[in-house]
Image (cartoon, rainbow, N blue to C red):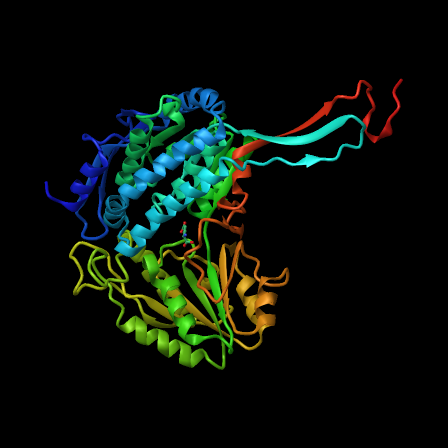
Length: 511
Ligand code: UN1
């Protein structure tokens, strides 16, 4: 078969028949129902395989636990060297993996290549981190005592990821967890089995040359929601990192909390951008369009609410509409395409429903609707929508995973920040301004209540070096860079007495 998907799979080394379960270097058939996935580009068949069943979770977590016993003793820099080797393989297969992402998710080539770049970047970050898992030394109040903390590996980590970043979000978790000494049990979205199998295959190739790496540090279970539920309930997984809907996150959090495990949640966003009168509109328009229609509005960081000063609102709306009118929408692999398809027909229906509700709530809708001409048959292509709407419309409270941009007008920055913060989610936010005071206000404690606060850039497209995640219903977790690694380790506080006496803390006498 000469299909680009087959060529990429062959180059990566994916073996047929496809299996839904991998325990390290071993592939096992799933015991669940049959899955047939198809491409959002044209509806063509992508993969057919038997899904993992919930009953298989135990076998995988037992293997991951055994791997943990050995992996935690491998020096962190040697664990980092494994991640470095994985990153090297990713560099060699960047285009192949990007091709699979485009076919499975519908991302344009630029964004698919960018997603793999994000994996490479987090590998590089993790390699450096492997020599920097620093603990603090504190001054002891007692003579002849040393007080210090050490960070130790935590245990196997469950990773539940979403279709829209099928590989980068896993890599954020996997690369960091591995240098921290933790194995991974990954449940990807059922919509993206091939990219997951490709990632695992590249891990297997990396392991083949490393006798010191217990294979079951990398495990895969392509399964339905029941597999995720069992991972959340598994006492063998001290940490479960989940990316997806608020409903899914709530369920995972509840189950993990019941067994007093840790969860790291990265859930819905309802991201806003304020455009102030002093904004550089040239830059703002470019940032707005990339954030609102990039990945066809299916990033958790996608721009959904544009809060514009009334003095520039008409002009800005007209500029955006002009660009929307000639957006190159179509085959994501086509030269010059900027907007690919939605992931499936359900997503298109959700978009249509949201626009109908917005209209009922007084919104003025521009665009929207299915696009049938000039696009591959069998795919789900839509026109990007802009909706002028009142700040109190209830639809503004909800995240719709589609290219819908609501536009709201404001009079003063205080009001704009209030509008901005008046939603249940708190992931990414942005302000366009040339006023230093406005920028600092937005970044201050009285400003944006989000985990990501940007000035003069859009809401999407964060770098891996920062901690990624948000507040409120976004779940509070932080993945990727900065000190997010600490969630993947356990902290031990050591007090060592070398004094020959036994003084008690707080000066207590107990003779
Ligand atoms: C996501 O949509 O789940 O900041 C992750 C961004 C990307 C990651 C998005 N680096 O848009």
